[in-house]
Image (cartoon, rainbow, N blue to C red; front, top):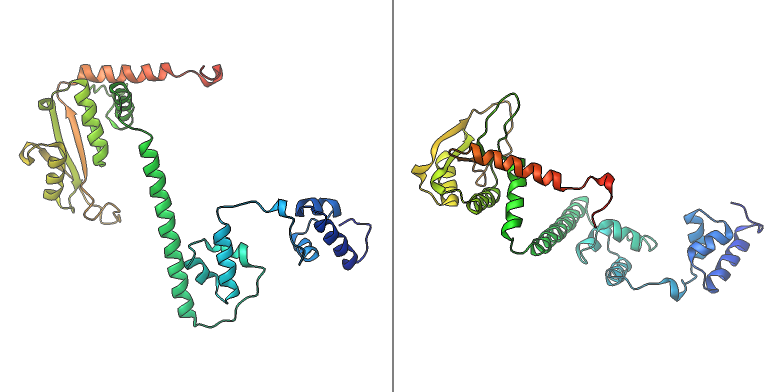
Length: 287
């Protein structure tokens, strides 16, 4: 640190004088060439911040409550649990206050920490769900053209495709997500594909509950279980720990369009039309 003043006290006197003159911490730091935050804190200890540097903040109430609880002798874990703020924020807000004496066993402290962490997880999950709900409302009802374009992209991502080394111009779509299947079927309806041209086949691990999966997909697609093609069973590898288990696992459903070669060619053409309709980023932004 380069400074014409000598000694901590003289430097503190100058820092406090600058603070009272209305300078911010950053201005004082640059004026005195003090770039160590700990030293700056010591120099400004007890000197209130000028009013113009205190801005209204949505967390002001949380911060004030956290400091109040700390003054009552609560730990970070206890403070985190009551106001519902993160432990990192709590530490930032109250670290300048005296540390409370230890009044509980390690087991009690661990239980409090777990409850605090659980409260944090619940708050984060609610924030995630709120973001998803807000995003969903931004879509609204799709026009036929919007569904058409979405369906083309959906098929080209998840549907079967012909390869130069293996020409198979067939329309087959497989997925484990019921919502994806519903959107795909709505797209086929938009294209005028009759339901009697569709073949439905379940694929599932042999160790799963096959009959329940067949009932699930039949109900979702609005057909009788007997109308499903023979289920494909995937051999179970005993060395593999499967993650897709439980009541929510229904395997995958394949939806195949009979006599679909012409439709496949059109889907491929539609996709390349989308690709061709996107301006090369090197050509600049669309106007």
